[in-house]
Image (cartoon, rainbow, N blue to C red; front, side, top):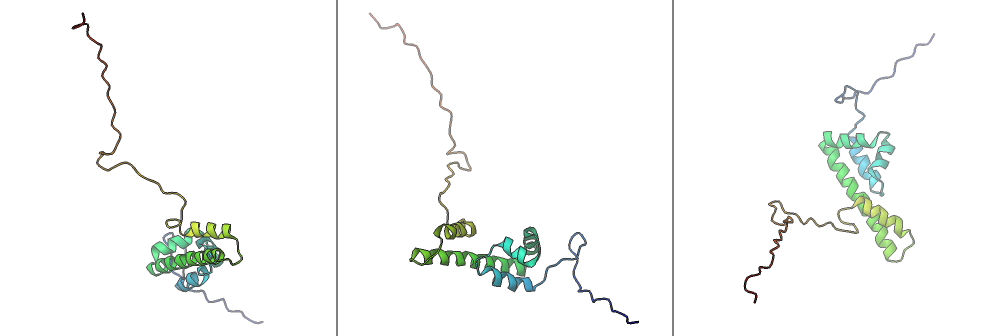
Length: 143
């Protein structure tokens, strides 16, 4: 009778709840390589096989992954801007989809409206109530 060996378990560090984390330092390179083709963080999470919230948790817990994710997000935005510029120069493509991609990945730089805040921290620009005093005409001085 042949005996089988148990598979060797990969060592993992435990997360806050005691569950082993799936985080791997190789995800830094993977995020950059994957997202440079315009993919979102959600798509990256699906590619890795975890929830989007897990990717952001890894970024909070691992500075090297946080930096890689920021770089990857910038590269994804650049991909969409490149598509939009190519379409603007006359190449085939869907301008609406490119605009949508750019606005969703670079919303601070690509937006349709700006919001103005007309309040001030010291209240000097806050509206003041107007008081109107009505005075009845006097009968004095009439002949």
